[in-house]
Length: 130
Image (cartoon, rainbow, N blue to C red; front, side, top):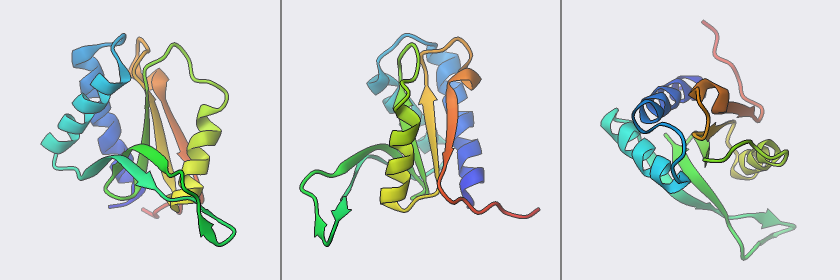
């Protein structure tokens, strides 16, 4: 499955979570609910995935920790805050580069309409031709 197809499924599941729970809860609650929703839809994921960071021939002692890695292709960075910081998108892009992934989604559940809380971050993603 291509990253774009996976992201559509993630967004659909996130919309369902937001529809039921609404804004204002803790990020950990949304993470658990989204994981359950993705599981119900038959989508594979790993929570709190550690990613080693190579640096000049060594592996740094501190790993990255991804909120969700879906179908081993799409990184999902979950948020539950009033607004994103200016560092959220560059941070996800760094995660994509270091983990050699091509698509990431920032999903901020603390919004009135979830579509306003979804941000796509791309790292050399090849589009599929239709």
